[in-house]
Image (cartoon, rainbow, N blue to C red; front, side, top):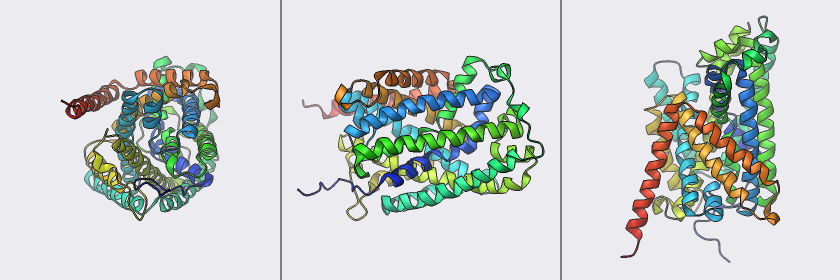
Length: 423
């Protein structure tokens, strides 16, 4: 049987899938999210990190359980359609596309903020250049994406490892800055949940593995293992970074910072590592942006196949086997967003849309029969409810903007269905 013209090639093994997932998580999140989280909850950001990690784990195993049965491009867009119905699938797919498009903008802006000195217009220009360059790389094929991601993740981990040591042994590092229970809970339950919602932005990259299910070898075995390995490693790293940043600078310094890890190094008396953190942040942001472009392009491809996005996007390059039209369109949209928004606004908007995406993933996993299940339904309930709680705790501006754009997508689908309906 010949391969369909719009089918993707299965070229990725376990190691490549884990690295693409880690590359998508170790990006702007770890270098930028601790600042708004500290603003919301002070030293309680560590509790928020734990909440975000728990919900991310529930989402990860739900996604893995679904991906093992539906190993095709599209992630929860496909799972929602198959398990809950077309409208749920569309809501998930639209949420993923808009949320991760905002994430792409956040990654590009973080890269420019750390790597490019100078006025804001210069940084925004550099961010657009990064988007276009990485979209061009993705255009040449997924194996090149996996290779570059391996390099970028390695560099990021080396820099973060050096930062952890430098701050831990800094002359002004003080464990008392972690505070006690009263300090950690001074922002109240709302503050803790808001910090968790903002930090969730940093964990969402494991979905990239599921959305690339059509390109992974032996997906029923590879995808669940890759998601758990990638998430487990990143949770451990984020916990170490969060504790060390608080000991180095304290929550007040982090809350007021635009470059929290660099400021933590300076506050700890380890100024020499700050320039290297800028390099690490730039490299990690590029790695995450690379993985995001690949994942969003494949979800757009899946939606175009069903007519939920323009059919023109349903195209796979005959030589490079990538959804080239979807990725070109994504690069154009992200470039426009980069010129209009800031990093914190992009993070909040992205968190709103992606939390809704995972709420639908948990609902879809809940409906799977016993012979398809790998984890109890309680995991799906905790994950879905947790996503909705974190959505409610996000800053109201993010919630309002996210709800408006989700609504536009739903109205657009109503109009399309009416237009396509037979007379």
